[in-house]
Image (cartoon, rainbow, N blue to C red; front, side, top):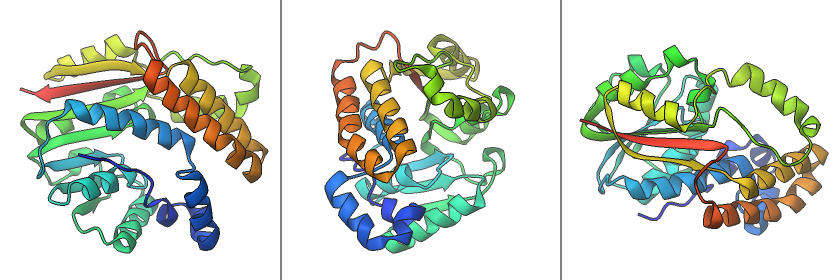
Length: 266
């Protein structure tokens, strides 16, 4: 399975929708422009190698956002039954518009809490950097378990409880303030996330750290570049992506700013 990413950005990004010609030019030169999402996808693509879902799976994307993972899977697996769930109505509308413009017909959207989803028997459920926005007692581990087939898989990727930075932290004060309100569920390290999976009834299949020093530096440069304006953002983009790719090659896996666990329903 060959996963690609970012083909729908021209349909989901407000800036690109406002400047369609420039979006074509930027995409041709720079590729995908959101460094954080780019980094997440490089991890997701590697994690998918641990999940034998076949060519016709039923898949649930929990907290689908703008649907980029759902679209990527739907494109790579045209016979799959993909479901994109998000509680933000505007994002669901954005996904539906992107699906229509992309001619993709094997993705179904849901604007409900996971506990209220009237679908089950999924082969695979995944959530990439979503659970940290949810309080621990409301994280849908149990709802996911109940909606999986026996031997189905749940993948959760979230930021590590402890974050390491490279450049002076005062340069990122606005981001840190945002995190205090948004990341109410950023409470797990790798061992405690593994334990949560076990407590919910899953058998552990994979657990790892990701996003080491090079990936962090790539994010920091991209963040600062974006704050300084569009030109600086575009100039830092290739460097940031290169650092992320380097991190994927040399990261040893004994720590990281992100953690991910895959569990199997037994």
